[in-house]
Length: 225
Image (tube, rainbow, N blue to C red; front, top):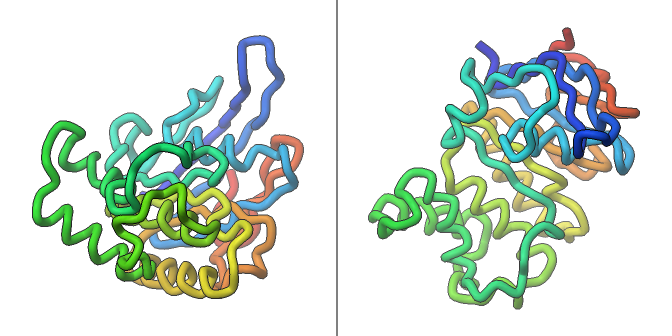
């Protein structure tokens, strides 16, 4: 059973709007790391949001570890682009990352010792511990990107959907993120990483999913159908 199976996927905005994605089909094997590439407007973010369950497809099927999207939110983490976050919201780095644990503990339950330990370890790995009490509005671009990734990773999911995690970050942040993604893949996590430049990533991908004109071309490893 692959980590992700997509068949005949069609997605559009509004009833009268044209399709953004058409007849998209591919498999993501367990433990694979797939680059999602394509020009602006090709549908990369739309595809990730649909797999994450944030958009409803017009047609087609998505299976995450054999289950429908709505049945396995706890097994999927989604990292949006920075522009989608309200940075003026009065919350600290630590509380922002803790939100990744709410799929396990619930919004109305106090985080457990396990939740706090997971968040603490994730902050350490992404070199954010000195900033744990800092308001998110005060972070630099690279720090914001690492914090958002920390929230996705703290969820402990088996499938990570990362929308441009290295967009407009410095070399130090790229190195930190590269080490983290390498460690996650070694643990058997499956990933789709949207990127404008595969060369920015310091670890080779297992395959490339290229989107253009709403259609997909899958290059070796991820299997097209």
